[in-house]
Image 1: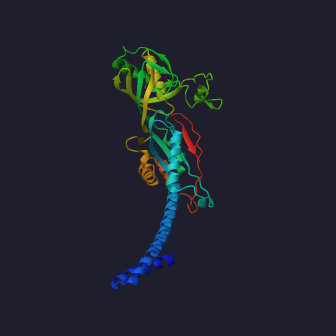
Image 2: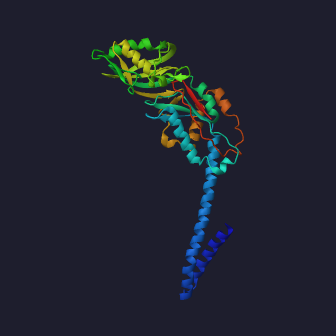
Length: 350
């Protein structure tokens, strides 16, 4: 590096000297010959500096990534499962930090811990709360609160999955159903009620999900009704056959079952056309959920800081304890996700 810098300095002196001395044919030829060599040396030096700076920058990002700890929220679009979205988030963060890298694998490994709580179906969109670092341990406590949804139901059609992704199993008339009819029955689904979970769910039989068994064509018996809580339920819009509900509920509640039950109560049938989770615990879609173009280490660090004020006092105290030493935290193992589905489930990975 010193030699390269000396070459650059020498080049500057040479250019100054040639500017002051009247140019002759000999000096012109010498300058022309020296310039390409000088430029090449300067380019090598600049590339070396750039490469070194890039390595330092990536190492700093890797250290920052592995020091992140807390809970934040992302915006899940329709399409991917919650586990697939978490994988995408993890891959973007690792790529930004340049991890893993052969030079880091020689050092002490530390796993990037990341998980989510409160699975959203692939057809749904909205708030998905994510825990990173020690924040994965906060998910269960954080998500014991309420969740809020905007659901668009379709009257007159029932499906095997209870939403628009499934196969139509029944059709019934709905033309005589009025807005007053729907509003009149909502009270029956408010408060502490009993609800039968959908057959297409993450609930298990003999260690396997009911949804997996259903897809195989196996006969599956419905799970017994279980107690759930609906804090508020209102009709936002009715334009037959579609109706829009605003629902705030506790853990373990299935919006698909609610819409299906409303259809039955109206002597018809119904399924969920669209579902958006607008709130999960203290996290709201508008204020806290990061869109994918903001899934960066710096943006997540800022979000963690902003969201720390939303944590219960006892969790905030745990979070404030000093992290373990990061002196050798420059490697990361890829995470294998094992998804569990259900509104109140928590996925933790390591």
